[in-house]
Amino acid sequence: MSKSKYVTQVCTSCGRESKMEIIGAVVGAENKIWYRCTRCHHSMMVDTAVKSKQDNVITYNREECVDYSPEKVFAVGVSIYHTDWDDMGKVTSKEKTSSGGNAIWVQFEKNGIKKLIENLQLAD
Image 1 (tube, helix red, strand yellow):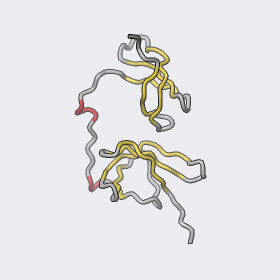
Image 2: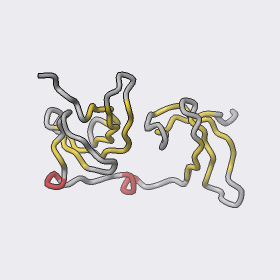
Image 3: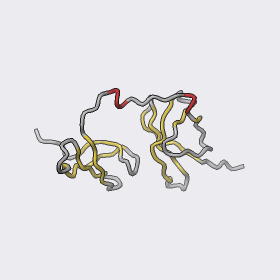
Image 4: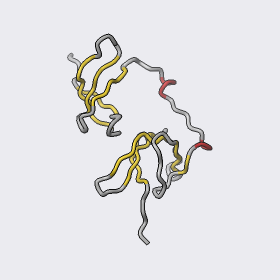
């Protein structure tokens, strides 16, 4: 059985989970591989060393989280709490939507990666 030419991963540039094309190995580093996002064509190096589950667990403190509201503006790295979902997460990236609005990508504990609206201007 041959190795797959693609792997599914979150792109650090566009913030979306997409198919990543394997470009090649890093010379002198056995656990690092170059990938290219098939959506935005951003290239990145990924460490393929096996991590324990404890390394991947991110713990959030409810007191440090900002309550989510579509009218608020958030910075990348801020911890937020979504009251409707009773879930905490961290803002991983921001983007401009096709309609000209603003959106944030959030990695939640229970719901995974979600795209949320920010800086929503409500018409009077």
